[in-house]
Image (cartoon, rainbow, N blue to C red; front, side, top):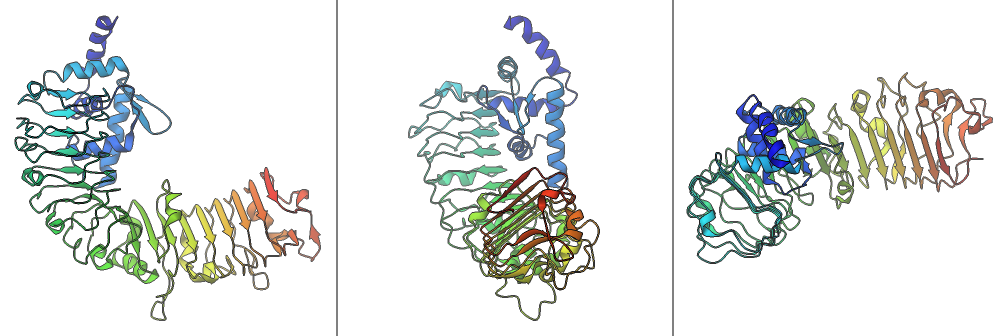
Length: 517
C-alpha cells in the first residue's frame, strides 16, 4: 500500500511551484510523528532559517508564511486544524524523510526516545539539517565533535541535556540555526562564539541556564530567544548585535537592563523584555523599526514619550505594555490579546502638571487598570478614548478613586467595546455621573456584549431607561456584591423599572446577580 501511495505523494511534492514551498514543506518533517505544529512557531522558524523571501516588515513575512502553509494544505501535503496548528500525515512525513536522505540531506530522529546521540558515521559531511528534538538525550560524550561543515540547522530541543562539550561545535562552521530550547543545560560552551554564521540562537525554556558567554562575535545573529532562562545579567556583547531582528528576554531572574544596551540595536523588529523590570525608555525610543513590543514602562510619562516618539498605532502591529510597579500577574491571564496596555500600581504617580494629556494609541484593543491611581472619570483621564475605534475590552480593578466611566463626550467613545469589567471600585457611583450626564452619543456602548460589576459598594443604579437602547447588543450582565444597588434600570421619571420588561435588552441571555428584584 505504501509503495503505491508514495509515487502519488511525490507527484504532489514535485508540483510545488517554487523552492521556498518545497523547503518549508521539508522543514515540517523535522518534527516528531503525529506532532501538531503551531503555525506561528513554524513561520518563526521559516524566517530564522531564511526559507522565505525576506520582506521589509514582520507582518509581511508572517503573511507570506501563512500563505505558504495554506498552499501546502491545499496541496494536501499538510493538515490544518481550527487551533492554528498543522500536522503531517505519517505517509507524507515518510515521503519527506525519504526525499531528505538525498538532497538536501537531513538526519531526522525526532521523538524516538533516544538516550544517546546517533553514531559518528551518521554525522556525514553533507548533512544540511539535523533534528533530534523530543528525545531523552541527557549527555553528549566528552570529545564528541561531528565533522559537519555544511550543517545549517541543529535541533536538540526538548531533551534533558545537561552539558555540551567544548569541542562539540568545532566542525560546524556553517551552522545558522541552533535550537537548544527546553533542555537542562546550565551554560553554553565558549566554542559557540566561533559560529560566526549563526542567525538564530534559541534557548527558550532552558530553565537551568544561568550564564551565556559574550555574544560579541555573533555579528549576523538575527534571532535571540532567552525566554524562561534564569540568567541574572544581560549577556555581554549584546550591543554588538546590530543585525538582530527579534529578541525575547523574558527572564524572571534578570536583575537589570543597563541603559544603552538596546540603543544600537536599530534593526530590532520584535522586543520582549521581562515584566518585572522597567525598560530604559531612551533605548526603546531609538528603536524605530519595532513592530512587536512587550515591555514594562515606569509610568504614564514614559508611555506618553513612547507615543510622541513615533506613530505607535501605525508602526506597532502588536504591543503589550505594562506601566507602574505591580506584579504583572494579570498579564499571564491575557497572553492571547494584542495591542493592550496594563496600568498597574502607581502608574500615575509621575503624571504631573507638565503633562497636558494622558495619551493612548488610537488602535488600542484592550485596557487593564489595577491599583494604578486612576481617579475621577475614565474618559476625562484619557480623552483619546473618544477616538479609540478598536477598543474591545476594558477591565478596571482595585481602583479606590475612580467614580465613573464617562460624564460627557465630544466624540463617540466605546463604540466597539465588547467587554467591560468593573471589580472592587469602592467609590464608583455608576457608568455615568448621573447629575452631569448628557445624552449618550449614538453608538456609545452599542457593541457591548458582556458587562460585569462586582464589589462596587456605592453604585445605586446602572442604567437610565432612556439610555438602555444604547446597550441593545448586551448578552451577559453580572452584578455581585454591590450593597447599595437599588435598581438596574431607573425610569427617567424616577420610578423604578423592572429589568424583566426588556427595555431593548433583546439579546440578554445571561443574567447573574445577588438581587435583581
